[in-house]
Image 1 (cartoon, helix red, strand yellow):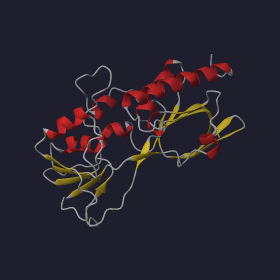
Image 2 (cartoon, one colour; image 1 turned 180 degrees about the vertical axis):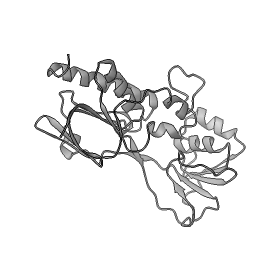
Image 3 (tube, one colour; image 1 turned 60 degrees about the vertical axis):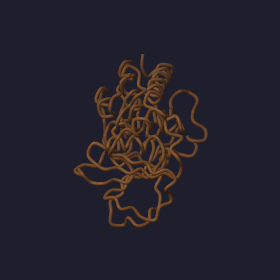
Image 4 (spheres, helix red, strand yellow; image 1 turned 135 degrees about the vertical axis):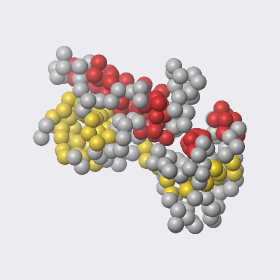
Length: 267
């Protein structure tokens, strides 16, 4: 079984930032990605608070500015635990050991029960929605993600956004932009709803950290020596922003590099 200096789990903004920072130290991490590089940025219509792009930038455009790691494996990590000062990393591509692990696995959508839509596709993101020009879309959710999805889809679809509340928790800048879109109609206080007439259903009802593969010991008592880090959306609670994730990734990489130097693995 091979031993890597650093394994990064997830190639979203945090994981990619960590990989790039490690490369500056001459360390090539092994990066696992279960889908495609970019994470939730691939859903974002407009990132408006990222430094250097005051006019905003689409998530896909922004992720194209990131460097893709040279050691990228498309596979899903199923278990991580520490044993004798090494991390055991199990995946559907095989098992390896690592001296350091950076978890940047992001989040998974919160699934909900929806009645009356058995014959219609239900999506929990929009990156996979293609070829639906001129269709109608129901978005279920009253947060920033729901309205960002609405903006993205409004150029090709008629969009109705249904929420339990009144959209008062949405970033005001985003809400003002959506209200100007003729293809988008907001329906506050409309949930629960027994049926939907739209062609496509998109659920944006919140997300939870994807940490099910991490051992209970690592989650409850992570090592303080700098060899293990959780960064980005999987560890930031409600503070899920691209700039924060990137900063987390850079910080984790700096601490990992320090650890490897202290134990004599790298100079």
